[in-house]
Image 1 (cartoon, rainbow, N blue to C red):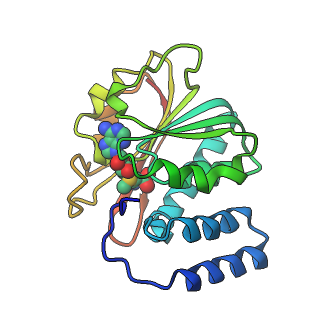
Image 2: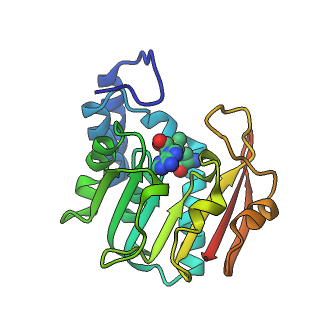
Length: 225
Ligand SMILES: C[S@@+](CC[C@H](N)C(=O)[O-])C[C@H]1O[C@@H](n2cnc3c(N)ncnc32)[C@H](O)[C@@H]1O
């Protein structure tokens, strides 16, 4: 299995597994238990990066604002640049939401097996799938069309307006970007939520906000194209 994003990772897999499994037992968290199993199966996957405190805080923020500004009932959520599936895992773990299915899409073929492992027990009855695809090449209409499209990787794509133009009018979206310009894979950072709103040019806006983290600020919009 190709190393995802991070190379030369030296750590004791058993140490991390035991610690996470203990934390899962102590807290009764199915999500921590799934993380422990995923670390054991994919020790080279960047779970530490994807589940670091800033990533978790940003996704808790997304979850909270979604719960407040939408009905929290979704038939089919599509997650763009979904990486190793942390956000779907956090949504399935949250009793405020009633979600029938989540599909995660990422251009990197090495991440789908990790995302599927992480979400396997959390989603139950095969409600989660991870696919390898370029978000610019997807068909966003049809019988399987999403009723919510989440893209918390907007800083990773060069042309946000072009990608949004592929979505059918009225489609509900949650978008996150940030001003973390020193990360080389961040090809499209924004300096403010207003700049993100200008790029997105949504037809309807339910929420727009900024969330200050130790080294950067994350920006989010919830609305409809
Ligand atoms: C580092 S990750 C996620 C960062 C984001 N802040 C988050 O936690 O949600 C960004 C992901 O976007 C994916 N990606 C970049 N361009 C893409 C594209 N055109 N279509 C699908 N996935 C893409 C990358 O492969 C990567 O896994």
